[in-house]
Length: 118
Image 1 (cartoon, rainbow, N blue to C red):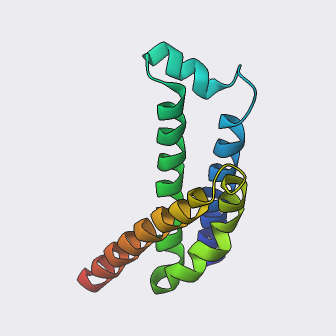
Image 2: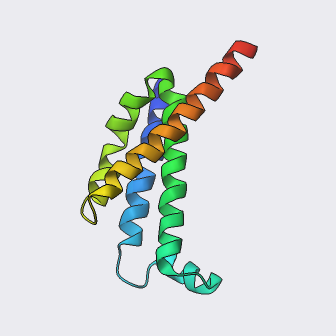
């Protein structure tokens, strides 16, 4: 694993999901609520979409950076967003880690297939 890949995985798997969760939990004049009202969807749906997309992006970054050791990368880098989600419910951190690990496994498999073709 190279240093730029580690930094990218750190940014996409830890910093962005954590910032997104903190932004969603901010008081009412936050950007997610304004976009949700402009699109005419509920704030819970918009919040779940944002969190889901950020967790998927983090999983892809983990899968590319860590390769077949994606489970360890998910636990190390996905712990910060999971701990923030643990304040709301007990199932949210488990679901977040499962989404990140499933996506990381798919990204790692894609990277391995691509490497074998070249």
